[in-house]
Length: 392
Length: 132
Image 1 (cartoon, helix red, strand yellow):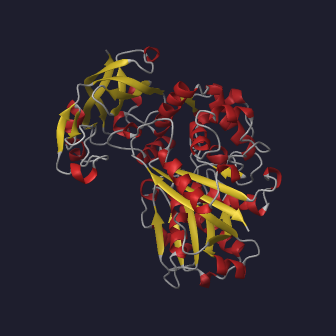
Image 2 (cartoon, chains in turn purple, brown):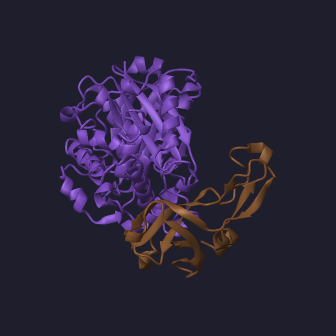
Image 3 (cartoon, chains in turn green, yellow):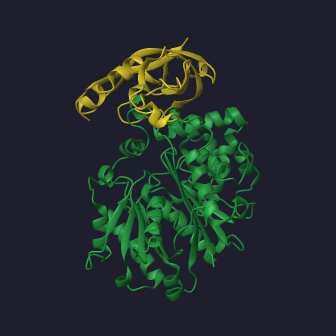
């Protein structure tokens, strides 16, 4: 079994509300989240050793690369020229940035690290943005043939329906539940409940998926301060320990995979994270999963081992994944309702898990939550990153 | 994008030219430099293989919200096609009504226009499928 050389904890969190922030630039949303996390951690910025930032595509969305330097400058970390690194794995960029930060601490190279995730999508029109999102799929063998990101998930959904009898209504229940949760989250893009008819009657995007099966385009940023356990105990009253981290890859094209109804990257990433943590799926009290499309959540709750393969749809319909259910999934509202600023999502997921483990989620609090999991997927599953956190 | 990007893979897109691992005989589309099963033993031993273009739908969708440049084709059917010789390819299904396509529907490859690039107007051609 692989373990980290030293334990790592989260001591600070911060995020912007996700949404269409016409009045804010990429720099400004990055600052908001980063400064909140540093203030929350209560540390002096002179103790920060490094910065990692998850961002899918500032190059496409903003014509701006080299953004790690921008964020470091904006949050005032360039006086000591600390190393800043951008990490990219489509919309798993945030989760992967966190993993790099953890590794840098476990290696002994750094003690205190700020990890951010940020994306500014609203500076381009939504059809242009959809083209950029498709860059997370295979441009040569998928997009050139007319594949959009939702169309690839739709193909997975159709096959799941065929093999396991998953219904259109069960897919819709994912979005209804996530909007119900999002209505309780002040950081969510959509803080409004919807009925199942809203999902079923929405315009088709790629059948069987409609507009309300798809996460929105969003601007937003989220940040964490992570550090070694010794430093955490010194400066923080309630550090949240990262007990497992796992990453898996798969082919970029869905057609090159043996199955359309599972994400092998998620299965492998979670197996590694569970092994490191020394726990199993039944030990998880609350989870944030990657519902960029409704079928994504069904696949996730099966591949993470919360439900048998094929039971994801029925479990969602039964209410097992809602607040108060067997395992509450996406109490933040998920990507669907909280919003999905690509590179920020993986960090926002961990923000929510930390808030849950601190017991600070107010009306959406999962009672006695002690262990939480976050699953972040890039594109259709070419990358998956899983983190498991525990309150000490 | 420059024309070379598309031109480079022309034989693969025009005639479903994939390759075959001479060790295990597995067939691949698109080309693989090394067999993901045989690994180093297959290096330099991957041979060109032309797929017949016949296969069955393993799953499909009807796209209503397209990428820029594909609007004129909406709604279009996109399917994963299990080729009879092995491996799976993603492509459009044309010359039929969306209601005619089901999982298991037998298809054959046809040669069609894929897209027209925005600024340069360069036309890309390649494989699509129709009901056999």
